[in-house]
Image 1 (cartoon, rainbow, N blue to C red):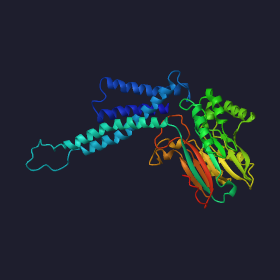
Image 2 (cartoon, rainbow, N blue to C red):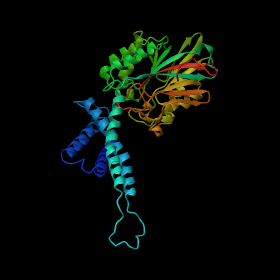
Image 3 (cartoon, rainbow, N blue to C red):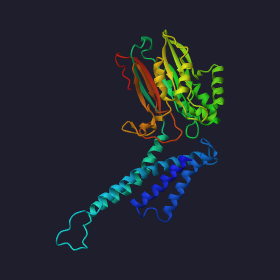
Length: 407
């Protein structure tokens, strides 16, 4: 209910801002349109608050949620941009505080700068247009196809056998209302086409269990030499953990190329070098987000218990905050998701950089590195500056010549 109240306040604030910036805009039928838009945008949030966070609307779920996202983004922008603009305009239009000339009459007033007033009026009217345009662009980007992002990871003392080892990562696909199994299938095929040695799926695979069979079929198209290793995210816990784990187990039991790691590890040899991949669970209980220290330490102790000194260790975690624990236990590279990169960034800087310690891209702790993907899908189709991605990571020995790939 807190989110619903927050959006209601912003809708009221947007109405007040628009009345000030463009007095004639919200009159007659246009006021009715604004009221209807506000009502429809809040319906999806209200239904979720009553029926459950992830409950689907009985009619028009996808269309209404898309509209709700677009409308909410637009009204928030109107308030955040228009509010300061109104204050600036009032400050610039304040009466001049000068001593009146000796010849002035008591009723004389400072002259009005008509050019400045017209400029401020037109600029104010551009605010709702800017908000609507930005919202539309974000929705269009949210529905666009993923990009294949090539990343070169240079690791000190990397064994020669692993120089050039390629990993394909997908994460936060969220098969459901906005992402279908064909989209996931295309992502797996993109990794196949890149001829990666190992594919990984770092959590939040699915939101609609009615599409679980098709989802597992898409993952099973993996052709990587060492198969696909997957871990759980918070959405698997929310949507139906037992059902999803059984689906993974069925794929593995039938000889499929996909293996789920839950506070466990899997070892294989590549060109004579032994590699161990540790996969940890999402640190939560039920719907609680009281994550952190204790549960992460439990996962670290369980997941890394079989690590041997001669192995090169990689770690898969949905929540990137696990990175220090993985580094302490010798993981050379940790791959994570969960943040979606904030889904909005300007000039490469996430707009919500403060939400996570590790938000997007590469981080280093000593000789250990973390890569946080911007996500292959989303559960709300809105992105600006953070495209969806299938990541292809190439391991290189630090100090070795570049192989001509972009990073």
